[in-house]
Length: 155
Image (tube, rainbow, N blue to C red; front, side, top):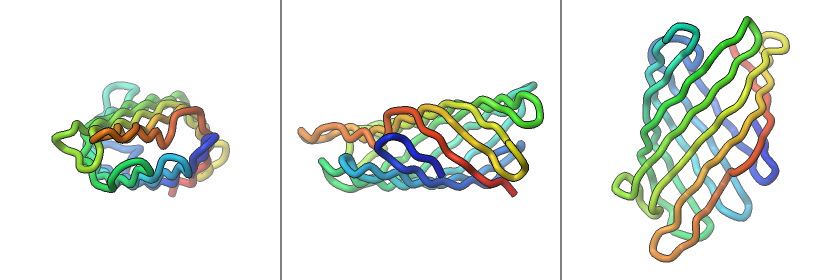
């Protein structure tokens, strides 16, 4: 899990550090802007020192200013493992109006660094942006827009 100034984020991943299929899930909450929960499926491909991911996510959206609905987002990410304990990463997912309900669009971006201090404990710090664009005159609901820090356990 991780936390930014105005939001907590809980997530899980299976197969996210190796080639082949990977599954992810997450929940982000913001008292002022609402909630989003996702379940994703991706395919990881090693590219030299990088691990590239392409995939999609099914997302339940519940903006505070707007109607609850869903989004089907496509996107991917890139991980760069530097040594045994340090790595950099970035990812981006997007869903247009045609693949969303209750919102105009869904955007999620995340970038940062991970440091495995002692297996299985990893500390992560970065910047997260998650926006549910308003529809039918409703304002945008930015669930996350700022730096965060988190911790995870990998088995």
